Image 1 (cartoon, each protein chain N blue to C red):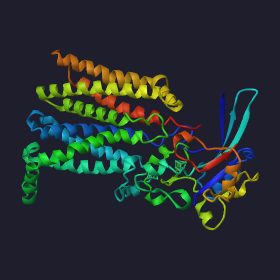
Image 2 (cartoon, chains in turn green, blue):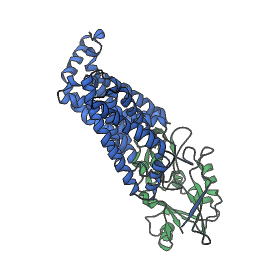
Image 3 (cartoon, each protein chain N blue to C red):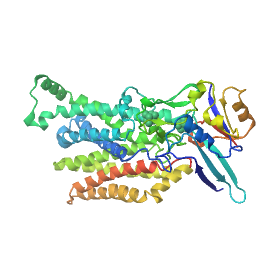
Image 4 (cartoon, chains in turn orange, red):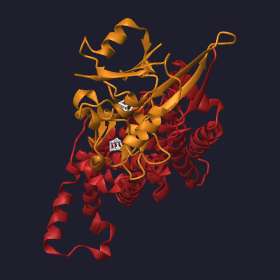
Amino acid sequence: MKYAMVIDTLKCVGCSDCVVACQTENKVPVGYCRDWVTESVNGSYPQLNLELKSERCNQCDNAPCVRCCPTGASHKAEGGIILVTADECIGCGACIASCPYDARFQHPDGYVDKCTFCAHRLKEGQLPACVSVCPTKCMYFGDIEDPTSKVSHLLKSRKYKVLAPEAGTKPNVYYLI
Amino acid sequence: MQEELFISGRNIPKIDPSLEVWHFPISLYLFLGGMAAGIIFFASLFTILGKENKVQTAIKPAMIIVLFALSIGLIALFYDLTHKLYVWRLYTTIRVESPMSWGAWVLLFVTVASFLWVFSYFSELFPKWSIKTGWLKSFERYLINHRKQLAIILLPLSIILGIYTGILLSAFNARPLWNNAILGPLFLVSGLSTGAACIILFSRDHIERKLFSKIDLALIIIELALIAHMLMGMYAGSAVQLEALDILIRGEYTVMFFVFVIILGLIFPALLESIELLGFKVPVVIPALLILIGGLLFRMVMIEAGQLTRYLY
Ligand code: SF4
Ligand code: SF4
């Protein structure tokens, strides 16, 4: 089993509900965020294309943050989710520097924190908080190794991209374009 | 194609707008680690070759400096950790994939072995306080008889320590400025050169100083070649590497890099050392100090500029 998130950039309106939901659900300290929304304009006038998308840790298959962690605090958990064990983390910052998506931050308490795909909610059979609140239902979550799942189906039927594939991290967050 | 990017809802302290997880203490740590590696390398090499009497400074006073350098380096490293209470976790795991992990272990072994080394010279260094206690005395005698074995252990460890400071950075493929294979050898050579400069600085023996001036000169030439190699490698690289190169050659860090690191830290002291080797009088402290300052600035430039480079945003 491998969890993946598929986000439809054509449906995202940039409301940032996902960001607020995450901050509330995960008690993210004020001023920090585990997910965020980017807004980019591509092309040259008059052929311009505005793209909005919600971003977070990509739960990479080939995760540099796990590889460089000297204590093993950053690790791969069930379903391919990358987690940090707070009291094994020494706050050296190696994982932060190694993430091409800048998806990690130093929690004010010292350890490193990041998106967990809401692993605690998954255990109870719920969806990640961001996915469940999205008003346009632009986010999908599921097992990418199950060919009958919604996420697999979407990736078969639609065009998609991942962020910075050239960094070689094999991300598990996909953007439908 | 043009691309403009606005970011909303993203605000991560110490990451936006530019990453700054590593600060001056890390540069200091890498510098002191490299310099210590250099001194240990020379001390153990000459001991293995049976030429201890030619390099008295390198094997005695300079090895005391190594102890200080390693201790201050470790304190600096500790200071820059944000979850300090868990620092012992470094020594409950060995993670071969993580340069920081094996670096921490090598540092531990090097520090212990260097303490033993200095202890074996204790009575020579401090004749007034020579050791009297029975078991300590026999331990000292044991170490004195096994200095060569200690040197054989320390020599490869010093090379690993020196190269690790560079590999640590080059392993981060998310930071295009760091992600090049030349950084390991480059930091090793730079560490050896600062080690030699430190020995020159403290040596009172004309012959020893001359020997290390020659060694240092050769090392500086290699270092300049490696820097040229690094810049050319980036010049031939991908878009993100070209951006990284820009920071060094026409960006925020250009003056610091070219004027202070390359010219004042390498070329100028190399010239002074050549003039001195030709027989003219140059106060040795000048080139030695310039090399040491240049070495520290080099690490600062690499650490700080490297954190400005990234893939996205
Ligand atoms: S996005 Fe960054 S933090 Fe998340 S798994 Fe990949 S490298 Fe690690
Ligand atoms: S900051 Fe913590 S999780 Fe990150 S690499 Fe260091 S010890 Fe591992």
